[in-house]
Length: 361
Image 1 (cartoon, helix red, strand yellow):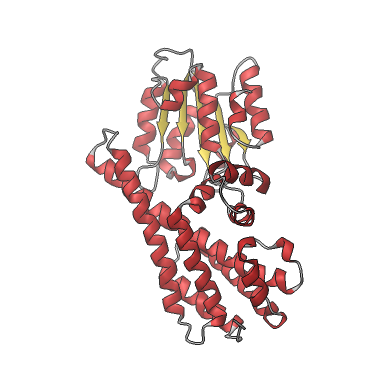
Image 2 (cartoon, one colour):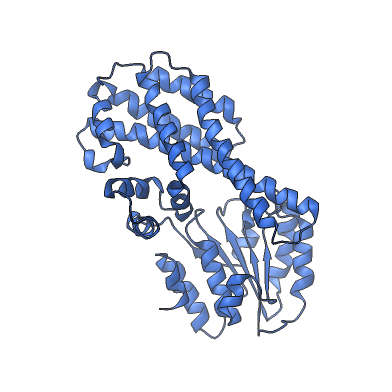
């Protein structure tokens, strides 16, 4: 088994990386791109380990010929790239090459991207620059055109299920199947879904999803607040983890504070997006059950409830509710929406579509 077998699927990415190792030499720059949580960073570390020739030290972050940049705060700024440029023109300390990893490359501001472009055009022969990005859109064409593109895609449900079975072998098959579908092809979602606190937040989310059409006294503002509370809990957990990680790092105070804030903000946003995805999938499941396709439900561990709720008279409203929720998700993904206002507006619309049709208990 070679090093690239350590992360699942991604056949095209593995083909390109194996070719780079086996050929006369790698390209001067690569751009790993694709959704978050599908193995890009693990692949970048594995690639760096192969290029350097000391996999263990690279994985531990202790090799002097591997240089890492990631955003501090919300962006990679020009000062970060200037430091990389100064380092880039130092010859390798121990290995034959130096490898530069730039995580979240899409967060480079315009000045930083312009500064990096100069070194992408004429890098030293011993340097390999690996950019890792969740989204190609913000990166200038000039950056993309100077890199070997290495695409990553969402993982199959089968691969995610194998990961869940390995991490939590005691789960009931229906729950494991449901979590595999909810993970939506992302390994980072597996970690979130298997966490006991995440499981509790999921229970709350599904209570809110049902209350839209079962609770005569439903309040859109209160429903929005419950989702916001879950996101803030997740932010607090991420903040605590980031603070614990800082104990092993020697960072300036400002940089440490920015790292903690970024971790908290990122976790809160990810929790909101994941909650909206699951909310949409619940209403989609109502549609699936109403048309008699129970085997296709996402929430397989809640099938008995879905069968009770998935009434024919609710079909059109549920279909529209799923689309409204996806529209709100896209709004959060693409624009700087206010979460309290956007969520309350969503629940007003969901209530209008689904009403409060009595459900037999």
